[in-house]
Amino acid sequence: MTDVRTPSRSSSVLKSSLLTMLAIAALGVTRLVHLALVGRNVSDATFEMVGLAISATMTAGLFLPGGLASAASKFIAYQEGKGDPDAARAVYRLLSRVGYAVSGVLGAIVGIGLWAYYGVDGLSVGLLTFAFSAYSIEKSAFYGFHRVLPYTRLELAGAVVAIGSTVVVVWLGWTAYLMPLTLGYSVLILGAWVLLRRKGPRKELPMREIAEYVGLASVGGLASAGLLQALPMIAGLLRVDIGAFATAVGLVAPLYFLPRALGMALFPAMAGAHGAGDLASVRKQADLTTRGLFVVLAPLFAAGVLLSRQILVVVFGPAKAGGAIVLQILLAATFLMVTQVAAVNALSSGSAREVRIPVTSSVLGGITGIATAIPLGLTLGEVGVALAYLLAAAVSATGPLVMVARRHELAWLGPISRAVTVVIGAVAAAVVVDRMTASWLVDVVAAVVAAGLAGLLLHGDLRAVLASRHR
Figure 1: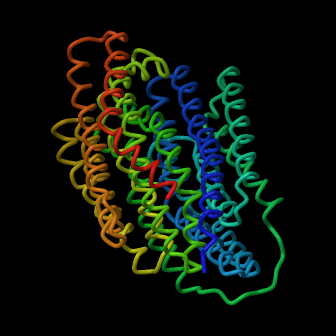
Figure 2: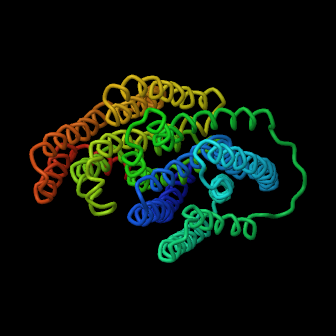
Figure 3: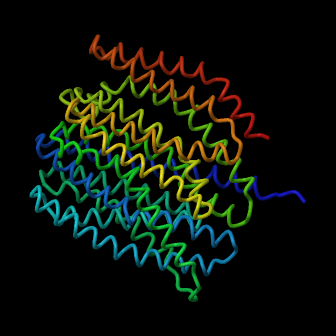
């Protein structure tokens, strides 16, 4: 009998991915615009404190709330795939209640901690931590229930609120620099209360499996995405340029989150496929998505690397151009982190044994990054800290990609090697160009040439991806 589920599931993933890319682009742009407006209107010391506060709140939100969010996306979709919507509702109620309690505790800890150590406004930091943490859980619940369109609308509305209130804060000269982000995240939280909360019967849930998954996902999220957000704090501890990392992390956020939008749509689809026993769909989605991300994003990231200096000037002003090398290295690391999305989802949506693979890789990557940041940061300054994160990204990405390729017998070595060569080559070229001249025209020409050469090198791989999609 022919399996007719795969085409419809693939179509659903594509539609969800496109909507999510729009929403996540709004999320990344919101944070970037907020940081740019604040950075252009405050002193360097204040900007560094704002960057540290955002770094701390995002890192905390990617720990236990991040694990609960991932569990919501997986187990809600899994129960939906099994045809048990009541169990899906029960999962949501459980994870959201625990999530709000955890978010409140983390908000208090982070707020008090930063107030005591740096003297910042602890209440604003605590509220932002709570809002971002709760927002993360509710966002994943929308995906678990396949309510992507309402989520997109709420994300766009939140972006408008956050950017608009940032303009007001800066224009009036207020110092509540974190409050616009808190208000923006709160829009989606309120929307979830209206659209998702429903009463339902009590159901027996796999509590041990959910708890184990939350623990693993929390550790994995902190070691991977959390490490990126923590870079300004690491820079502060090593007494290197905090501002360079605050600006670089803000700039890579749209690039970091935009491709991950595909993962947000793909993960519940893969979890549903596992629930329905449709492993062929998991294999096909992992293969097409991974190869597609590598060959499509490599030219774009190569161009971005060579335009880094000019982007910093346009967004933050000429004074921040000196941080170009940090941004260039973080772009290369971000490329490695976002292109592994499908492989990580293929494993994380499967058995408990498979879930441990990306978590273990992330932990090893995080340990590598922190361990190397100290000697590299002390000897090479901010460049050393950035290189440590690049090493962490390489370690984190290798495990999931290798395991999925072996398990499903996928030929990924060629396209991945060529794509990585393109991005690393762009970083090397950018270092040379930056030392030779500060001309914006040279940077633009170099970016166009790099993207063109990358396109030629990866043309055959792109054609193979397109051909595979129609099989």
